[in-house]
Length: 208
Image 1 (tube, rainbow, N blue to C red):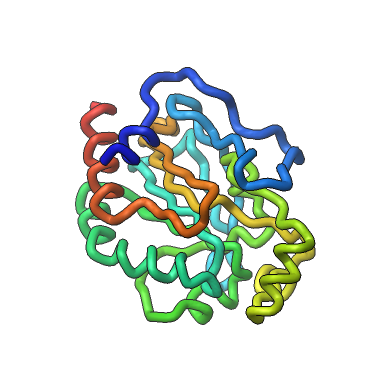
Image 2: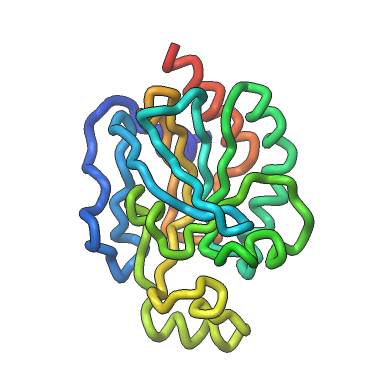
């Protein structure tokens, strides 16, 4: 619960998202878009390659978005599994629940360890993660270590950017304003399902 309170910073104060192109080399240096700020627009891709447009100025419902690393990440798979218990409840509350993966479209569902019915879009070019200020560049040593585990970002993403998002959760109200954010540079630490649901409920009450 303390983790949840620390993540949900009230008011408009805080730093803005990292400037375009200023992607840090260290996950501890990301600067996510602030609570109270207008959410940025972005383009991503559906599993069939169609363009998905996030237009915060034209939302008809609040959006809860989860940035995760990819289907190759066991901690991401565990988090997606945990969220199965609350995803229908979030939709019943009126949320669009959007999952953003760095996997290229063809791998969005095929790379996961179990079948899910989530709405997952590909942010392989990291446009959304950069816009929300959670992108960072993976260093050469980490890339080499990942390859020893059979993880090749160039293959899974289809680009040579070698960037990943700090795993994070954002809630954007129907006016396009960020009402909640949670992020942790330690990719093993995720916001549990119960805390996600509570944040969504609290954000709805606060935006009335």
